[in-house]
Length: 292
Length: 301
Image (cartoon, rainbow over all chains, first blue to last red; front, top):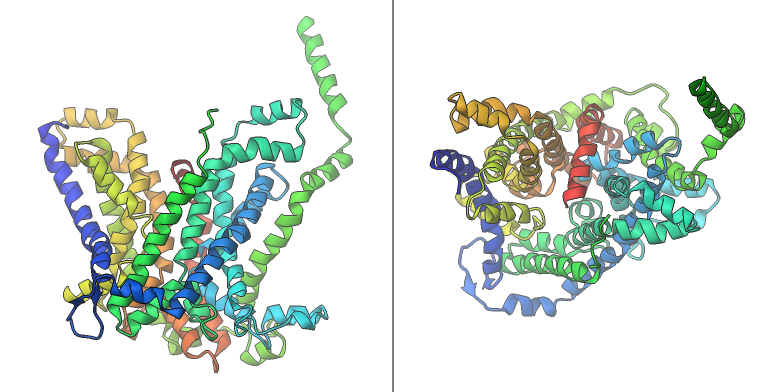
């Protein structure tokens, strides 16, 4: 317990930030759980207790299942599209290859941009008739590959993975690179003496020592996949014909349609899924801590 | 003599290992070339869309539609004027400027006093408060958005700048407290103790001694918060519906969403560049802070 003369500081310094945080973050989050058990729609404030009705309705809602499948697709696609290139790029940077400094500088730029800018920019890159991506394929004579990327329900969801990887790779490169810098060089030297080639060094030195950071990165990316919203809202608004509808965009539409209780239940489900991912991933990926 | 002989052999040894300079420079270029097979395409993938956006924002709409790859004949600076005046970007820009700077000030100030109290004067329960703050980093902003909307409505803060500012402060406190807590823990307490012996009150000590010492940590967290707040989309979309109060990201995205089929694309591109430029400038000026911020996050995370 700190001496009495510090009480004034502790109270004055902690109460205002804590009050703001509790009122505008903790309270709405907690209230969401409460509200999700009510039937609450329209402008009126009349809420009637409905028990698990909203959640039972969700189980029967084909749009919800569709959205859930799309989020599940992202939860698999994002780690592959983001993590795999990030690990290789970070490894390259740690090898001090020519241009490392330039790469470190440039790769983070997309992460500095508003999701609104990235969304509009990529929507135009994907534009069917004159967008750069299609006209690039036509230039190469690969007309068959040109398609209305965001207008075709079969490919729209896949097309959205690219801008998301584009935003995030640079950030995760730097996170993994920072982890690589902590791996002591002697371990690699020892591995080389033991006759380890490039792959063995990667598999038996880099991966085990990086495991903790990789776990955190995977959790972050997966939780991001469950809560993806802004980019999809701007680029496709969940369309065409709900082929890119996500839990979050669906919730936003329910909110706009004044279905507050039901919409909040979707949000709570997202929260629970995020928490589940966190716990399961930590369990699955737990290894003995490596001391070095 | 002995000493000289020894240095000679070392030099000879080094020379023996050194390859001729041409071979050396070539081998240097190709050092790690399998990685370059990923680096160079990715570099192009990052840089090209950005360059394309910037030069396309200087084309006429006709030029854009006739040759999507071509450079502008004559740079059309009027596109920026059209975006700024006709499309209302100037209004969005000043909204963003006011909201971001006040929210940033509030976040950094409240974040540093909270972090300082928690880091320097642990008391029973302080760890719980710290964890409560940190937990906010993992909670998706989506969960509480509908209750927050009604809370803001009840407080008369919906559709107001102060409302959005206070929400930005609240949602950015977890990260700010997290980074600054770690930072204040590393600051030596000798200076603070000395100031207190000289008769400074604890609060005076914080403002006169500790806060200036924490400059570099505060700068790091302020820059990361700046990028987050300037670019924020979700809260600005839900909590502000009055067109005159919209922030840049929402305003510019809306130009695209509303005019999707008969858009003045080049003015829209100019608007995107206007959103982007402040962040890129801050990024160029404060690169090392960004790296430090991410490294701190990676080590502690």
